[in-house]
Amino acid sequence: MILIDRDDPTRGDVHQLLSEHLADMFATSPAESVHALDPSALSGPSITFWTAREDGELLGCGALKELGSGQDGAGQDKTKHGEIKSMRTTESARGRGVASLMLNHILEDARSRGFGRICLETGTEEYFAPARRLYERHGFAECPPFADYALDPNSVFMELRL
Image (cartoon, rainbow, N blue to C red; front, top):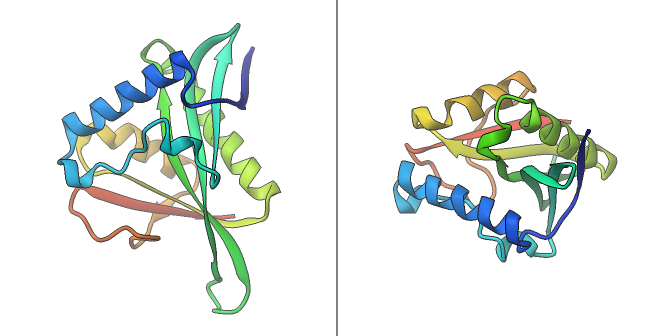
């Protein structure tokens, strides 16, 4: 059974997975277009970090960064916004639905905490095509840059209204 729980991004096996994630990001995108966070940044107070494990074995991770509040589409109600960060599945766990389980867990947590919108940034390169398809299957659609992001030919910005 796969269990998803809050975890420490600096924990040994998690740190290794996140290091692989960062290495892949720098190998596939120009440095100025890499927005992945290192383990210490993922330990920040505005970020909730989870891992997926089966019998103690790390299968993947994901995080939700609280971006604060903003106006809704009508320009009136303030709603909390969040950003998905550091979604990664171990090579041995790929194709087992771990990413979908993690994404659903993050979205359920965001809903329970009153978030109105979840955004993310991912790459435009072919390497990121499976991630883009995953997010599209879960209702995400392309959007303009959000938070501190700027237009970048190497980035795709996506959002889901909750």
